[in-house]
Length: 135
Image (tube, rainbow, N blue to C red):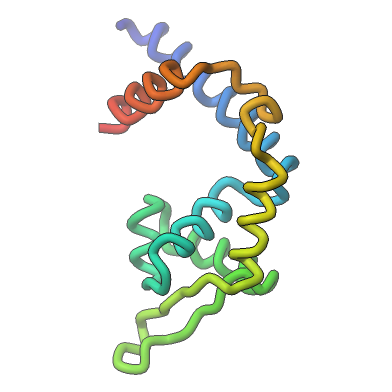
């Protein structure tokens, strides 16, 4: 693959990302990062802010910004570790769990809403290819 081909591939990925994440946010009311953050907390339960940063692969300032917004909306609570005041634990609220459930109920056909025209095999192949690109 030459540089021009790589550039075109990356540019198409960028455009697809912009379009789909914008539509996701308009449809659900959540940015994709905040939605993933809440999903992660829903699955993992209480965890440290640094663990969230590591799992989401974003910097600490970005995690802090997202958590601040979610906390203001009463979707998460943050509490300092009593034994280590530099560590902050984050937990999802019942309100957020209800909101995630509502999103799942209301957006069962999210593929159509986002304009994703892939069958199950294509979805799996795309996930494998994207994972391969990230290694």
